[in-house]
Length: 189
Image (cartoon, rainbow, N blue to C red; front, top):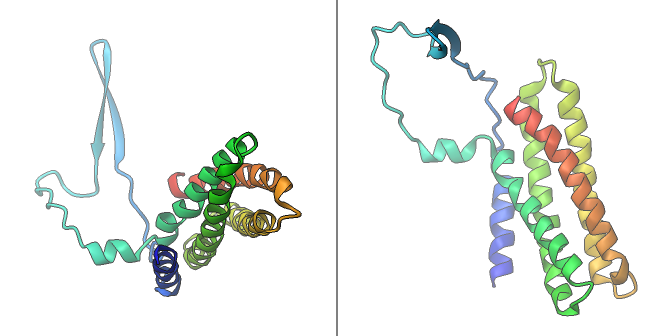
């Protein structure tokens, strides 16, 4: 029952509209430094005149849930795959862990499809930026990671390949780290 519910949620997120930044640019406040005595003080300014009072933040949950979807769902396959790698390594000595690994890897594979679809939908935000090559590399690495997760699923469920599944898991871990590095550049500069 739980697996069916999780798959239903993943499918709903995959079919929902994928909005990136809606071509908006996030403005960073300017930072000015002033030296007073022995210390340096930083002061942030915005484009608004100082006489205007700052408006309170209004939270719109539906709007927040519908934007940056890739940034939200990408953590599911990462967390599931990392847990599966840890259990795979523990399963070298204790075979009872390996049954759980199969299901973690399958869930990571399914959720990676949702993350890839959401990421492809969000990529248009970077069309006009100098980071375009980074998004293309991140896309290729993300698709390769998803493909390798599915290969790991095959290795986990095929009895003849199970003894090599942990090797594929280590490759997935390496690819997740590299892909995440470039994703972090895109998300955080």
